[in-house]
Image 1: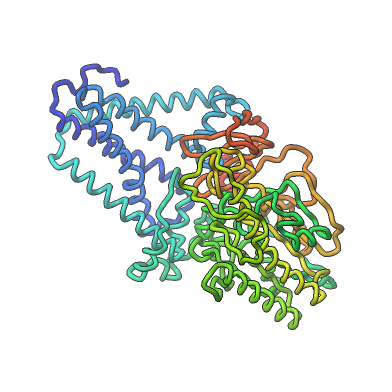
Image 2: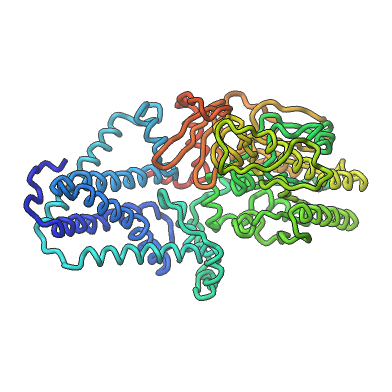
Length: 625
């Protein structure tokens, strides 16, 4: 690779290994400078510099050290050949972060194998000219020349005897320091640290709340109010794109809002037998038959539902961007003096949902009872009590109830055991052809129980005469797969087929006739629909949301961005493209065993705009430059 066949010929293994580590040390400033380009507009403090440096050395250099060491051991019998794969690994890694930095500057999207693959297949469709590819090639050749010079120089200079031990110790300590710092900052909402997270490529920092909470009192992070205040441009987002104009007509009474989640509710489980109470409500409501959550996980689905944004924005919002308080939907309700009743046995505080969605709002996560069945029952009692209290005081309110009984392991009282045979199965021993009938019936029984509790809330609203002044939205965070494709997938968070992402949505809207909507809709549509329909928000929805009005029928194919625990996927018609940093898995929406068709450049262009829209200032700035 480097053009000299006899390189390192005759050297002892220990000497050769120190020379390879020396080359790695030479690359640290290069990696540091490249990643620093992603930090434009960050107001650095001594703490920020410490965290950034520790992350570069620990998170990015330490893995290279491990790979170099393993490659050296693998090629130990042929130590002269070790130079080639190790040189290639270092060069490819540095080249990747350089290209990622250039792409991030323009789009604020970190590149992955999906985008690289399609750019290489049809670069002109992405607006890239042959001169751009020529410049990229020249950049690669220049980087190879730099790496060759590093290797040559490493051969000639005298290397400290304890170089390997020093580099190993420093990188391990740096990794530990960066991750401990992030875990504590995440626990204490210190944006001097958390606002950097979305700017690092392929970065999955530690957010261990249990240990962070225990030891956070020993750290000063987040305690100094002035030190915890970022400047206007500190955060990664530019949101909203313009000032939002929402003017409720003076003679219009703001509607009460009741939102309900049945955990893991499947799209095919909203019917007269499984959910009779919700089904009865659906007959006088709007029902969306091709509706998708914004995620296959609780965080991604809940975030999109309330924020109106797709889940790829979650890391930046979670970083407590200085320009965002709560989702615009929540802020508008606050401005209209709404009282909030948030009831959720879903670890909203631990997952940062409270800080990013319900900041400054009490979230009730404690309910009476020894079992989830009893706690869901008590939550219903508290929700009904909250509604009664607000109705008696004539306050507009928003109530949100998140039920857990139909989360695996499915729970329900004996009177709801109506679908038989029913029972749990040991998923550790499940196979592709495992019959899900008993497991499916178990799921339906638990869903039937939750529907019975929801029926109490609907009945209370009806008895109070509040139905004609209450928006009722019933849905879920994600769906649950029950081995539908016979590919041994159960539950959620493991793929993006419709069995984990397609969910029911029933919305009762005052003064709107019942309807059934068959075109594609998303959780990101719900907040902007309510804002425009009931709060006089006149802005273009694209100013503050990834969604659109639920009742605006799309004129063409609508691609969706769906978030997961650590990755995301694109859904385009019946095709799913599941994105990992170094891997793309493609399959059909209805069958994970079937291969997806290639996406069109037009759809990819829409997705790029969708994922980068709220970094618009940075895009404009890069274009001006």
